Length: 411
Image (cartoon, rainbow, N blue to C red):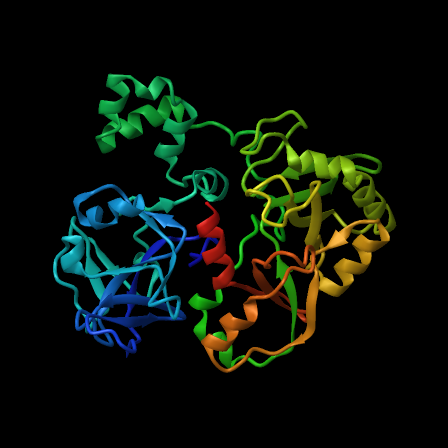
């Protein structure tokens, strides 16, 4: 689930929507939370119960509460049971299992081990940091985790070697000590490699999952559905700095790549490789010259190939755009973005449908996510992304459960 800052949270307080039986199962049943379903012990949960939900692709801390996950290396994945007939996604744990005080079901509140209240209906519901939950894939931890907004943590991270020493570690334990250190070490400019925040319409890319938006099934507006590609998010921005001066930004999901030889989480800098391969800076410069009223223009997409294990089985790296952004209106429609990129000899993510209307049930929605990739028909696609061609702020994703199960088996 994305929080208000667009950061994916992996653990949060929820209310159980319903319980359904599993044919032939005497000891387990399915608990439904939003669009997710989780296999749980029979009789343990009831509609209206408050619990903590842990999303798939996450890894919990190696503590006593999660010892039962040790055989699975503390990972939470999409699982199939009963000969593949029953799908379980994520993990649900109540107060007793977590070692927390009893939940207040009527008020929708859980209290953590420190007594802090977390309400399922507001921003306090997220307990990812409190429980030490991270992405399961180490590369995802590095690539997708947003930088800390705690000024004291940022200070310590910027002076990592210094803050390893005993006096600094001790001072960080006390509020007055952190404030004292901040006077000398806190007031630093953002690192040059930080993802640029000054462009109102350009943010690190991520989409909310349909499972966290179950009411979206009641929305019957016509959407554009595109294939979701499994690679690494890439952002390119050209900013006008004067009459004939421009600044070019090459970024991964959270980091600005200043030079082609800057180290990344991949064997080489694929972000710059794609910029050079497709002459992206030159194309964006020509676009700004043709549109002199624009302050900047941006292109976001997925670099695929020798990243993430090359799930598309490509022979060489490639780039597929999915967001074309102007400083005056923000993201333009997928159809217009596709026309622009194709005129530059570049590729847009495959458009699956220009007349998509959401089905009535989550089961059907999830089934429709699965299909063969239009990039390489010999493999499954990761899923679909949906956008409103008339509303540039509206989008969400639908990841294929079949793809997730297949991917996990191959790891």
